[in-house]
Length: 329
Ligand SMILES: Nc1ncnc2c1ncn2[C@@H]1O[C@H](COP(=O)(O)OP(=O)(O)OP(=O)(O)O)[C@@H](O)[C@H]1O
Ligand SMILES: [Mg+2]
Image (tube, rainbow, N blue to C red):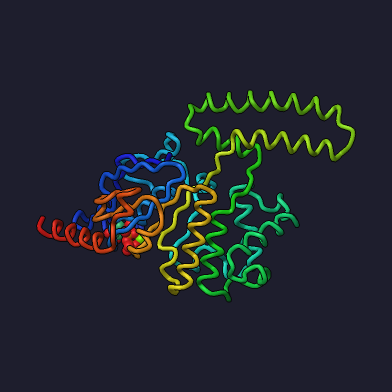
């Protein structure tokens, strides 16, 4: 579960009190694993700030961010990166224009896996996997693997960014251990013990099996089984997807395509998702929960049937009322 507890963030560019802006005012929010939340709200209402705080690119002035009950408020962005996939409004942001489709995917694939990409070769089977993934997008990207991303349309770049943000690369055992200790929600010592004793136990079994193995293939099979057992128990990399108006710069038809793709990826992988949009129809169509921000506060939080009953007009009325209330203060 992802939780924001009493999160407050104030910006002050000049240092003068009158320039102070409260972007988030004591925000409390609990998001269940696998929940798909759409976020709406006027300009400057605090949507992007919320996503930035969750991802760790901003640190709140007060309050906490919890992931699986674990306080991650001060964990730096790069350490959380394996858990958060992000796509921004600007198609230029998520991909490197002077690199090819394949090179971009390679970088995304290696990110969070190992700090040194050099150590980790890019394998033929990885390439095959990427091509299969790209085909699902139906944007013809699989035929343009070696083309520079810079010459592609915004929609193609955004689709690629989405894929790169959600590519689930298998972490090494060392990384799994590190992250399990960090993010499992158990006290560190307990998490470490649990990991190590399970690992040692399975390793003994593996060593016995390796002694009896008669071929290289059989040995490899045992090693793979061993890794899979560890992974099934300890791999927490069920990513949280953060989308900040990621279809806003696209034409309506491409935006729809990318949105449908988003929905598909989110559902298939049961990803916890926060999607900011200014399109109220999209906010109602997609996701299972809808949140409305207004001047750093959450003024609406609906899910399930209640969300389904809402229409764009209802949301517009709520915006108007919130504005009136704020003006009369
Ligand atoms: N880095 C920053 N420095 C100064 N002020 C900031 C910064 N980031 C955000 N703010 C201010 O915080 C408030 C909330 O901004 P935020 O970007 O979260 O709004 P938003 O809801 O994402 O708006 P939009 O719909 O325009 O993207 C605004 O008043 C904004 O000017
Ligand atoms: Mg924003």
